[in-house]
Amino acid sequence: MASIPVFLTAEKHHILIVGATTAAIAKVGLFSDTGARITIVASGAADALTDAGLSAAITGNKNIIALDRPFAEDDLAQKTLVYIATHDELTEERALRLTLAKGLPVNVVDKPAKSTFTTPAQFSRGPLQVAFSSGGVAPVFVRRLRSSLERTSPPSLGALARAAGSVQAKVRSLIPDTTRRRLFWDALYDNAGKYADMADADIERLIVEGARNQRLGVTTGQVQLVGAGPGDPDLLTIKAHRALQQADILVYDRLVSRDVIALARRDAELVYVGKCEGKHGVGQEGIHKIIVEGALAGKRVVRLKGGDPTLFARTSEELAALRQHGIHTEIIPGISAFQGIAASAQIPMTDRDYSNKLTLVTGHLKDGAYKDWARLAGKGQTLAVYMGVRGAPKISAGLIAEGIQGSTPVAVVENGTRANERRFYGTLAGLPALVAENAIKSPALLIIGDVVRNAADLAKPEFTKLLNAASA
Ligand SMILES: C[S@@+](CC[C@H](N)C(=O)[O-])C[C@H]1O[C@@H](n2cnc3c(N)ncnc32)[C@H](O)[C@@H]1O
Image (tube, rainbow, N blue to C red; front, side, top):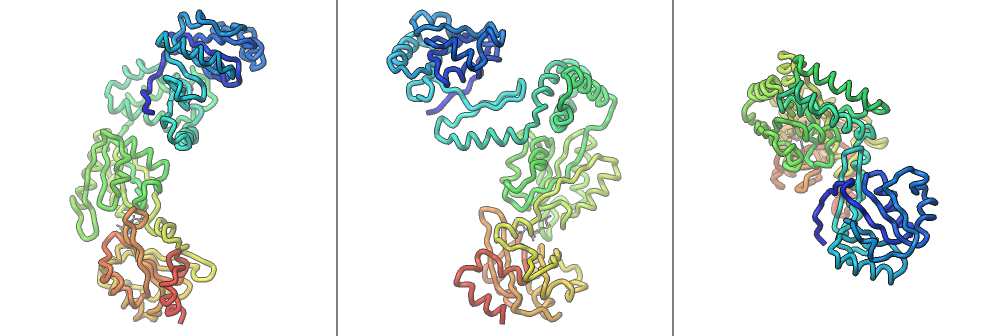
């Protein structure tokens, strides 16, 4: 059943709860601190409330009224919302009929078909409230969503939100510029944990102090070099995800998957810099210009890079350009292609039987060769080659010429961790044919070494011949 989410202003409502069951008392507990008036009616209601520690005599909450007698039609007068939670079917039917006749919203607890509204699963931190519903079709998904919020929202967020509300006008006058003000609130949110256990007045003081500093010209622009991982958006770090949601400008290239870009803030400016193997789109200088100018304009710039920003990503050059302008810069790591692929193909990169060394190299052979072929691969080693599709024939021939066995197992994984991932297996000698026959395209990673024997796919019978040849 489709639902319409609304939030009711608690203090303008008078809720009637019919019944003294555990569910009825739980509803009293749920609403007791909201400011709503609550009347519970049923024989035994007063004792049940006292047992739960919710009676006005215990809590001093005059908004809770217990009518210790059976439900009567007059109880509906002046009420705006009705819950029915009784085991007595006759009372349930009568209360429901009379409530519907009056056109009041009614919830018969655990009977959505009879109800005109449901109470959603909730998450709250002080004044921040989130209500969840799946219309009853996917309660487990709702639970998952709620628990992910519970996990990522520090408890102090509630106090911070309360304090922010109190000094909102002051902050607006200190930081009139809307972009700078948003950055200020964003930064506060990021550091919510710092305000744990502080009194509201202290938090308010610190917020105003921070806003004053901002006004004094502490620069707000910054660049985050963010690892987007190999493609699957679930492989982003929580920090990367947060950066995406806060970016004013998102600078990305071909290696960043659409699924990851889709996580950006809706009104972020997306700048495609078309950097890809062999072609550089706006060029490295152009990228420097975009990120530097964005930050100098006070923007929060996210430079998204496929995989991890510290591996084969020209990050040193971008860091140098940013440092030249004194721009605050942060690197947020990502899962590199070799890690994503090691997981999706189930190939541990080191292994007690086969390899105690992992080498990551680029297949962009600047002068047509590596300087140290002999040390790259061989028994007891794993070699992961980035950007190696085009150079596969040279890589294969070069390694074999240095004495690496042509029968060494090889895996080539294209579009690793993405929906269109393709995995191929062969030997070092057969690598050029493997790439050509399967029309393997970039992005793809070559993994060379005996660890490939552990790949989940190689447990399949059709690969027995390959493994036997490699063992020979
Ligand atoms: C410029 S490098 C960037 C590497 C990236 N910084 C990383 O840590 O994965 C690009 C190369 O990474 C590899 N690569 C990146 N994403 C990949 C993916 N999803 N599947 C296979 N290879 C990938 C390919 O070899 C591609 O040519």
